[in-house]
Amino acid sequence: MINREGLFYTKEHEWLAIDGDVATVGITEYAAEKLGDVVYVDLPKVGTQTTYMKICGEIESTKSVGELYAPVDGEVVAVNETVASNPELINHDAFGAGWLIKIRFTELPTLLSHDEYAALTNEG
Amino acid sequence: MNDAQALKTTPLFEEHVALGAAFTDFGGWNMPVRYTSDLAEHAAVREAAGIFDISHMAEFFFEGPGAAAFLDHALVGVASEINLGRAKYSLIVNEQGGIIDDLIVYRFTDERFLIIANAGNHQAVWVALNERAAGFDVKLDDATSRYALIAVQGPRAVEVLKTLTTAPLDDLKYYSIFEGEFNGVHAFFARTGYTGEDGFELLVKNADAVATWRAILEAGSSVGLIPAGYACRDTLRLEAGMPLYGNELGLHTTPFDAGFARVVRIDHDFVGSSALANKAGDTPDRKLVALVGEGRRAARAHYELFESEAAEQPIGEITTGALSPTLGYPIAMAYVDSVHSDLGTTVWADVRGSRQPMQISSLPFYKRAK
Image (spheres, one colour):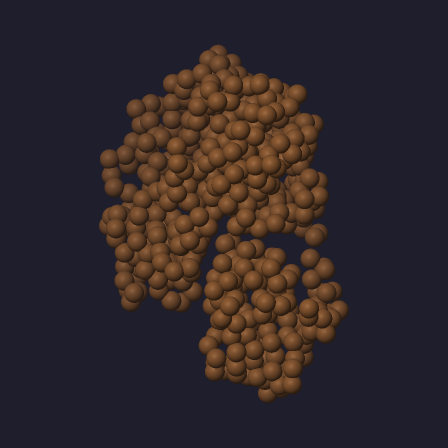
């Protein structure tokens, strides 16, 4: 069970778990709920260079399309192939089995803390 | 949620809140978009049953010796030919033949009718009907704020409803209406819907709405009936090939563009009949078509369509599109130039920068087993 309070967040509703110079990235439960049932994900390939806040993937629900914004500058080092074939994992376990990609980053930008993200999503 | 306060709510709003619904603005109303899962709700309606709050829709009653003649004048169809107790899908158009709304006309007696129209067009339809009533002996009653409308749809819907009424539901054909008692209160039973499944739409007084809703939920829980929101209502109606005003229909579409020549009775006099008579024999510039794709990436509303993978000039636009939950592949409705609208034609949808082939197919995408 991941400790959500120890994660970093972005305004685009991504979460990051930092381990050394690798960030595991997913979308938050809040974002997954807003999207509805996810039916398709389009993720970058391993080796893709990412640029902070540039779109690097798509998450589609029956109702709409959500964009995945790269939360850091870096290189994709792993992709969750299980979530690509079972996109409903994003709804069932956004902070766990529903992780999307791992990025090896050069430098961390300013990210939101758990409390800051909670404040953002509570205002509606 | 400050914006939500400006939205209207139905008598069932607190029920939706208690059920944990997420909400969305639908035609100025704060309506439940989903309770748990779009896909689970969609599947429940296809396999068992779902209950929808559609109380935001407009209900207008018409009574008087001139009611039938008035509706003949106001709508593209001939209401005076509807058999007692039956219903008909129709359109109200302006003088130019543009669609103001699509609606269902229900007939109780020689002199008494009901129209159920879209929430977003409530005012436009009400104003047009009042204008058109001049000179007819008919009383118009906007009952929207006094009634709740509850749709129960799915293969098990009728069986669930039968446990709460002695009304002869089995004898009521598709597109008919019956006035009777349901769970101890007065109700109108309309065997119509917007999902492609069998079922009823129940019109009850506001004060009876909560008890009716709860009774149906309880009676249906053992067969898998669940509350269903607007997200699945949209994918259900798309699979059933039913248009949505604002997507497939609008003031700049005529009934012929939308493939509704069969509901227009050009042989009678109505508001818009001369404009439509002029167009009746012609091929419209564009036609509403059904599209079927491959893979799991849906082409959605407003995406452009092209003749080939490289063509630069669009030949059409998607009006509604989704990955069909029942079929598992992308489906869409779209307007395309008539010259490209033949069945089987391959067109290319621009899905956020990449072109995907889709084939022109026929509506509906999904048809229930009889």
